Each structure stands twice: as C-alpha cells, then as structure tokens.
Image 1 (tube, rainbow, N blue to C red):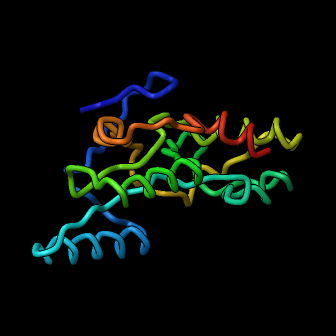
Image 2 (image 1 turned 90 degrees about the horizontal axis):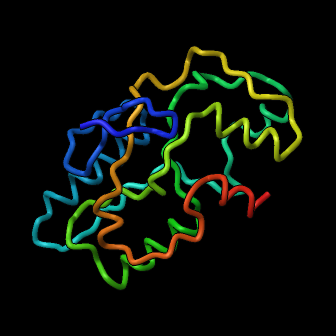
Length: 171
C-alpha cells in the first residue's frame, strides 16, 4: 500500500497492524512495552502510537535553524506530526471512550517533507533558509502513517489539522 504525500511522491503506508522495525532506542523500548502489554491478555488496553509531537516549546533543531547551522539528515525526509494540543485531546477522549482496537496511530494525517517544515519555520522566525547535512539522519524509509482508525473513532474536531495551522497559532 502506498499513499501520496503533499508533493505526490508515493511512500509506504504504515497501518497499526504492519510489522514494525524499531531502529532507535526509544522505539525499541516502546515496542517492548507494547509486547508486554499484549502478553497480559487478561487486561483491556489501548496503545496510542503518537507521531512527532510539536508545539512552540517542542521544535527539534530550532536552535540550529536560527543559527544557520546544518541539521543532520536529509531535507527530503518525511515528517508525520501531531500538535501537542490535539494529541492531548485524543488521549483524553481515549480515557473516556476507548477505541475498539488495541492500537491506534495518532497523527494529523498530513505528512510534510522536513525541508518544507523548516522552510515554514525559517520564514516565521525570519531565519536563514534551512540547511541539511544529507547524512547521519534516520535510515528508515519514508512512511505515511495511516490514520484511518483514528479518524473513524475520534470525533474531533482537530484544533490544528496540520503543522502550518499549529505553528502559525504558536509562533
């Protein structure tokens, strides 16, 4: 399965039931927690897999952008994001009305290329255009996080349906 991104480049779609490969320590720890929880089948549980959480107080590489320094990795990498306010609303809703599935991907459903994300920030903060090293970043291929379950279960509304709206409100 492939999804089209904003720039019409097809990328693999990652649904909740897709096999996961955890490269980074945090992802490996998260998968170990999920496995532990699933093995305790006597309890009811919900796992919310959150995309990259952002807000004015949580923008990776902002200091490098402001200083005109290159950021590690490719600018072509795809970011799946969720604003902290929307993530909190979804989790609060889930505590009151658990989803019918054990695992739900949480993203705004509007992925963006890193270069576009940081171009937007550079314009908002009046910084130099972003630079990328093109090496040393994540080695996993781009993925579009499937939010079909989320949109069928969570009634909304999204306060920040994409990063432009979320960061424009925050900046």
